[in-house]
Length: 238
Image (cartoon, rainbow, N blue to C red; front, side, top):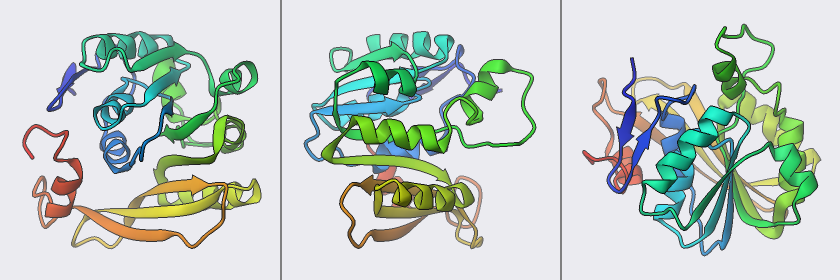
């Protein structure tokens, strides 16, 4: 069983009420994204609020964190309120589709660790299904919302498994959002398989930069220096 909380260097994340606990995916994207002076950031599907908190730690931006799950929203609000970044983050119980239609706000940076399972067996736990399956936020809806809410020179970052990432890149290109930065994630040095892609998109098409990060060297929890360097501002033991 996962712990009811996850402690980082500058904040603690309670997760007893959230279907999806703090994950390596969330920490990877939170650590990888560079706010670059962004003044407004949107975190789509905030869950525990961990990505919003990580971004608040390294920026002065006003951050809006949204989620359609009520328990997750309430948990994220608690985590934000008990953190040093309470004045910086606003947690809202609403969908991306609703925000895109009802709000006139624009964001310099949009970040998401989106649901990606499609047409697969679903869990009996409704809240976990909501968090993991893209029935309520298809890639098309995600891209449509991002296009509406992103500033002209803004950046959109997300993490997906390799196969879904390749599909998403094609969809994004067809809708006028172009890959500008890519990091391929491998779990172990002795395994060639790419597990995740961290991607950054912009409206302007250009050559994209790419890199590869390996999480573990040759055994469980024997982390590479590159992974430690990426996450050292957050993980307690790095």
